[in-house]
Amino acid sequence: MRYPVTIAIVGLAALSGCLDGTNPFMVDSPDGTGSEQLDENDPNTDVNNQFLYDPDRGLTMNAVQYDAANDELVINNLPFDGPDGRYDNIAGTTSTDANGITSGVYESRQTATTGLVKHYAVFVRGDYLEATAANSRDWFGFGYGGANINRSDFGLPSGIGEYVYRGVYGGARTFDNGGGIELTAGDATLILDVLDFDPIEGIQGAIAGDITNHVALAEDGTTVVDNLPDVILAVVSFSTDQGVFEGGEATTALPVSGGVADTGSYEGIFGGPDGEEIGGYTVLEGPGNVQVTTVETIQWTYTFEQDIIVGGVVVGTQTITQTGTTSGFDSIPASELQEVTNAGGDIPAFIGAPTSGIPAGADTVSTTQTFEFLSDYQAREVGVFVTTQQ
Image 1: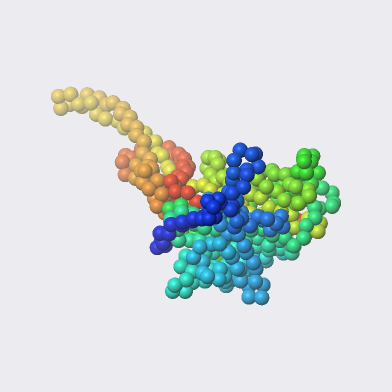
Image 2: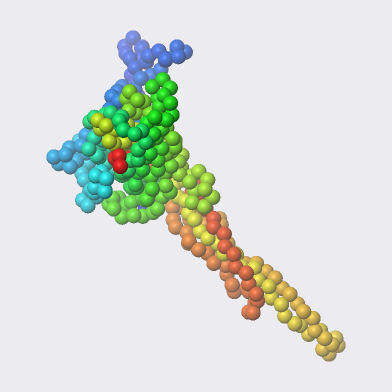
C-alpha cells in the first residue's frame, strides 16, 4: 500500500442569510416539527440522473458529463481537481467486456498551481446507461468524491418475469489514515424478478446480485495490487413507475471467519425501452487492510532411557518423557503482525513454528490455524456498475 505525501486540507463552508436574518434555504420539514435546510447543490432532481450525494460524508460530486469527442470526463464539485474539472483517459485502461459494457479510468489534470489534489474516476457505459465513480487521493480522511448513474431511455422488461444481468463494476477506494487511493474493478451480476414481491404502493419485484473477481488496482488502472472480497448485494425492490431501486444493502465477508467486513448500500436504475440494462452505485466502508496468515504449532514428545546411578554405580535405567509446544507466534508475536497490518504492510502467508528447541529424535505433531488481522484504520469504496440482460 502506498503512502504519498499528504496535503493537509480542511474544508470550510459558510452560508450567509438574507439581510432580514432569514436563511433562503430553510423550509418547513415534512413532518411539521420544524424546519430543514435545503442543499441548493443537491443534484438529485431528475429520476433519470441519480447521484450518490452526501456532503457530510464528502460525497459532493453533483454533475458529470462524458465528452465523447475527446474521450474526457467533466466533473463538478470536487475540490482542487483543476479549474475545468476535466479528466483524461489513462492510456490502456479502456476495455469492453463480453457483454458489450465499456469501462475506462480517468485522472484529473494538474499544473504547477492547479489541480493540486489528484483525482481519479471510473467510467462504465452500456447502450442506455452511463455510470461514473470518482474520488481524490491526498486527504487525511476518505477525501471527496461521489457516483452517478444516468440513462437515455427506460422501460421494465416485458417478458417472462425473471432475468439475469451481467456486466462491469469499477470504483475507487480511499483510506481514513491518508493512505492514498486504490482503483477497483470486478464483474457484476444481478438477478431480477419483476413479478415477486407483490406490489405495495408502487414498489414491487426483487433485485439481488454480487460483484465477483473484485480486485484493487494501482493508479495506472491496470496493475492488480490486491484481491478484495466479493460484494453481496441483498434483495431490494424497485419502483415500477420510475424504474428506480433504493436502500439496498451491500456487504463483504471476512476471508476466514466469514464475519462481516464491509457494510454499505447500493441503488440504481433500469435502462433501455425494455429494461435491457440495470446500473447503479455502491458505497462500502470497512477495514482498510485485512491480512491473513496461517500459523504452525508443533507439539513434541521425546522419550529416552536414562541410567540410574547410585554411589557412582549404574543400578538400573528409567524411562524419561519430555513434552513441549512451539508456535509460529514464538518467532513473530501477534502484536507485531497487528502493527504491520496497521501500517498497511504485508505479513507472511505462513509462519512456521521454530524447531531449534526440539530434541533430535523427538516425535512431533504439526497443526496449523489461520488468523485474520484487521487494521485499525478504515477504507471507503465508491463504485458503479452497468449490466445487460442475458
